[in-house]
Image (tube, rainbow, N blue to C red; front, side):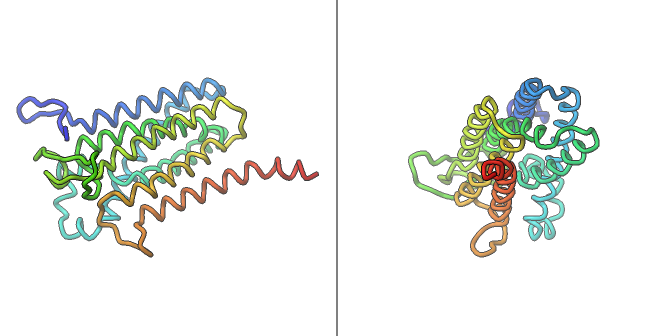
Amino acid sequence: MFPKLFSIGSFFIPTYGVLVALGFLAGLFVTLRLARRVHLPAEKVSNLAIYCALGGIVGAKLFMFLFDWNFYAHNPQEIFTLSTLQAAGVFHGGLLLAMLVSFLYIRRQQLPLLLTLDTFAPGIALGHAIGRLGCFAAGCCWGKECHLPWAVYFRSQEAAQVPLGVPLHPAQLYESATNLLIFGLLYQLTKRTHRDGQIFGLYLVFYGIARFIVEFFRVHEQSLIFDLSLTQWISLGLVALGVVILWARQRPETLAAQH
């Protein structure tokens, strides 16, 4: 749609990069605001956000190469192209590696694990919502062909490998909107009484379900396992993990009530 924010000669500022940066800053702002509310150290939270962002970038790219291994194995030169650089990668890969990085950092810094994860969850959803707008601008992560009134057409020759002039589902906008909704719900829940871990558990459940559904409208070359993509299976795994966290945090109250 609009892959270059502005250009001077051969130099240009990618819209995708700007929106991802804005998403990170917006998510960090929300996270620091929540951290102050629960008296977590701002410096450690800021450092964790940076480490998670770096881990997320690496994980997203690694999973992109893994999921599209057949393509990159036969076209290794594509790894270093502009379209690959512009591609968002696989968010699940970024999320999983960021979760691993956060676990190691939280343990090293002796931060409360579940409380810290709760603090980050709304900001992750907000940052992801803004980042998906960057995907839409760059033309990556496009949807399947459709002929609905809200179908979108990509026309820029500088967009990623998206089909041009074909009506497509705005899958990027679907995911952006659902993440924005998730952010709103989680942020409101942080103002209510809850047990540590419940906000993060709900994030995993909400996002896992949303991404599972959005995948039906996206085009990708992943192998299907029982008619579901690898991304959908990972989404189901996130939902399961979220349910386990929620169950574990509710269980003590249930047992106490029984006694």
